[in-house]
Image 1 (cartoon, one colour):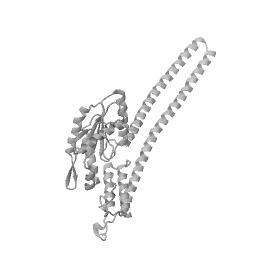
Image 2 (spheres, one colour):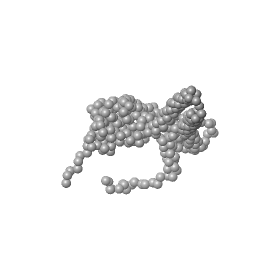
Image 3 (spheres, helix red, strand yellow):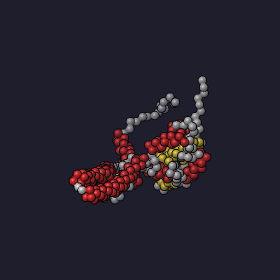
Image 4 (tube, helix red, strand yellow):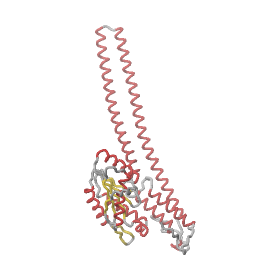
Amino acid sequence: MDDRGPPADCSFDVPDAGEMALDTVASMLRSMAEFALEQERVDPAIFRQQAEGWAQHVIMAAPPPMVAPPPAPPEKGGAGSGRRDWQGVRQFVRDYCRSSAQHSTGVAADLRHVIWVFVRNFSQAFALDEQLDDQMQQQVARLEKLVEASAASELRREVLDVVGRLTQAFEERRHRQRVQMTTLGDTVRTLGDELESARREGEMDPLTGVFNRKAFDAYLDRTVEVFNAFRQEMCLLVIDVDNFKAINDSCGHAVGDQVLREVADAIGKVFLRKSDFVSRFGGDEFAVILRETPLANALPLAERVLSRVRAVRVKAGGAEVALTVSMGGAAMEPGDDARGWFERADRGLYGAKSAGRNRLAIGERAAAPPSP
């Protein structure tokens, strides 16, 4: 720990309140894009670009992201005057709130409709069953009267008639119940698909399209449970984009977002099995959980990720940005819990960074402390 304090000539200026306010508004716009709700007829990627454009407009007075800006009289000071279109910022936020609210209202209405189908089908089933019960009760009452008043030959004929009617009623009930169960089954499947879709959307990272940190934590815990139950071989890869902060700071957040999308795409094209779990669990950090995969099989896959990322070029103005990633890997071992397994893979990532980046390193167990 460095206790020498700052050099004598360092000065600590109080940040300007206006600049702090601009940074706060821009940060709110970026957060709004990162955690955006679904909207009616709005493409998520376009919305994120627009939000980043407004953030740049707020911070640096860059031109606002308008498709066709209305003509305006030239202002004193020209384009460099630093004026912001606050009305446009407010309208952008208001449009987002309105569109996301409309989408949420529509989803809620769809779910209410599905629930109403349930209620209506059950109500109809009960009503029809009550009618059928009344008919059968009438036939039973008819039999009772025949037993008391009819001759044997007439009784036999009437009983056969009543039995035929009851048999027909039971067949009608069975047929109707089969139809109702089929209808209800279809409704249940539709509702289940909608709820599963909503759940999966909540587990996805909106920027890269891979799973998010919440989903990663849950899948990591489940994978540990599977290993403890069946002793299947498992591997964990932790991936970090090299020099991402420098790229983000020098080229802007829009280029940084594209870098993350390209890296996620390169990883996803290598791990194609249904059980391969690719996630973004930090700003520029990704993780891959491989079930039923020995470490020896995971290593060539990791090398393919390194090669694919090296081939990526991201446009930044008139230039292109070359990318590399560093990776840490760890096979699951008896006695591991989720935290210990992840920390070992993370030590491998640290080793890859320390060795010069753009490579894979395997994380080892931490050395046991010396006994006293």
